[in-house]
Image: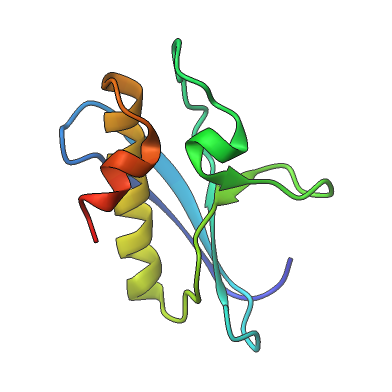
Length: 107
Protein backbone atom coordinates (compact mmCIF):
# COMPACT_ATOMS: atom_id res chain seq x y z
CA UNK A 1 0.00 0.00 0.00
CA UNK A 2 1.06 3.57 -0.52
CA UNK A 3 -0.44 7.04 -0.20
CA UNK A 4 -2.33 8.89 2.47
CA UNK A 5 -4.65 7.14 4.89
CA UNK A 6 -7.06 8.10 7.67
CA UNK A 7 -8.41 5.80 10.39
CA UNK A 8 -11.85 6.70 11.78
CA UNK A 9 -14.69 5.20 13.79
CA UNK A 10 -18.33 5.57 12.82
CA UNK A 11 -21.41 4.94 14.97
CA UNK A 12 -24.32 3.78 12.80
CA UNK A 13 -27.47 5.82 12.35
CA UNK A 14 -29.42 3.50 14.68
CA UNK A 15 -26.76 3.87 17.41
CA UNK A 16 -26.32 0.10 17.68
CA UNK A 17 -22.83 -0.60 16.34
CA UNK A 18 -19.49 1.14 15.94
CA UNK A 19 -17.44 0.51 12.83
CA UNK A 20 -13.79 1.30 12.28
CA UNK A 21 -12.43 2.08 8.84
CA UNK A 22 -9.16 3.01 7.20
CA UNK A 23 -9.63 5.31 4.23
CA UNK A 24 -6.73 4.83 1.87
CA UNK A 25 -5.84 7.19 -0.96
CA UNK A 26 -4.13 5.40 -3.83
CA UNK A 27 -3.33 8.71 -5.43
CA UNK A 28 -3.01 8.56 -9.20
CA UNK A 29 -5.76 6.03 -9.88
CA UNK A 30 -9.15 7.27 -11.07
CA UNK A 31 -10.78 5.26 -8.30
CA UNK A 32 -8.30 6.57 -5.81
CA UNK A 33 -9.98 5.80 -2.47
CA UNK A 34 -10.44 2.39 -0.86
CA UNK A 35 -12.32 1.93 2.41
CA UNK A 36 -10.88 -0.87 4.52
CA UNK A 37 -13.09 -2.40 7.23
CA UNK A 38 -11.02 -2.77 10.39
CA UNK A 39 -13.89 -3.83 12.67
CA UNK A 40 -14.58 -7.47 13.43
CA UNK A 41 -18.30 -7.60 12.65
CA UNK A 42 -20.57 -10.17 14.25
CA UNK A 43 -23.22 -11.02 11.67
CA UNK A 44 -25.02 -13.38 14.04
CA UNK A 45 -27.19 -15.74 12.02
CA UNK A 46 -27.04 -13.59 8.87
CA UNK A 47 -24.84 -14.65 5.95
CA UNK A 48 -21.50 -12.85 6.18
CA UNK A 49 -19.94 -13.86 2.86
CA UNK A 50 -18.59 -11.13 0.61
CA UNK A 51 -21.57 -11.16 -1.75
CA UNK A 52 -24.23 -10.99 0.98
CA UNK A 53 -22.45 -8.36 3.08
CA UNK A 54 -20.93 -6.29 0.25
CA UNK A 55 -17.24 -6.50 1.08
CA UNK A 56 -14.21 -7.73 -0.81
CA UNK A 57 -10.74 -8.90 0.16
CA UNK A 58 -7.56 -9.34 -1.84
CA UNK A 59 -5.59 -12.49 -1.10
CA UNK A 60 -2.47 -10.50 -0.25
CA UNK A 61 -4.20 -8.12 2.21
CA UNK A 62 -5.26 -8.55 5.81
CA UNK A 63 -8.46 -6.50 5.80
CA UNK A 64 -11.71 -6.53 3.90
CA UNK A 65 -12.83 -3.41 2.05
CA UNK A 66 -16.20 -2.02 1.08
CA UNK A 67 -17.56 -3.29 -2.21
CA UNK A 68 -18.68 -0.20 -4.10
CA UNK A 69 -19.62 0.11 -7.75
CA UNK A 70 -18.15 3.21 -9.28
CA UNK A 71 -15.36 5.61 -8.54
CA UNK A 72 -14.56 6.97 -5.11
CA UNK A 73 -12.74 10.13 -6.08
CA UNK A 74 -12.68 12.14 -2.85
CA UNK A 75 -12.30 11.65 0.87
CA UNK A 76 -15.72 13.24 1.39
CA UNK A 77 -17.31 10.66 -0.92
CA UNK A 78 -15.46 7.89 0.91
CA UNK A 79 -16.85 9.12 4.26
CA UNK A 80 -20.39 9.11 2.87
CA UNK A 81 -19.98 5.63 1.38
CA UNK A 82 -18.58 4.24 4.64
CA UNK A 83 -21.49 5.65 6.63
CA UNK A 84 -24.07 4.27 4.17
CA UNK A 85 -22.36 0.85 4.18
CA UNK A 86 -22.25 0.80 8.00
CA UNK A 87 -25.90 1.85 8.33
CA UNK A 88 -26.98 -0.80 5.80
CA UNK A 89 -24.82 -3.43 7.50
CA UNK A 90 -26.41 -2.79 10.89
CA UNK A 91 -29.91 -2.90 9.43
CA UNK A 92 -29.03 -6.05 7.48
CA UNK A 93 -27.79 -7.75 10.66
CA UNK A 94 -30.77 -6.63 12.72
CA UNK A 95 -33.50 -6.96 10.11
CA UNK A 96 -35.17 -9.56 7.95
CA UNK A 97 -34.09 -8.30 4.52
CA UNK A 98 -30.94 -8.62 2.45
CA UNK A 99 -28.28 -5.89 2.31
CA UNK A 100 -29.50 -4.63 -1.07
CA UNK A 101 -32.95 -3.87 0.34
CA UNK A 102 -31.44 -1.42 2.82
CA UNK A 103 -28.95 -0.02 0.29
CA UNK A 104 -31.76 0.83 -2.14
CA UNK A 105 -33.30 3.15 0.45
CA UNK A 106 -30.23 5.41 0.04
CA UNK A 107 -30.54 5.76 -3.73
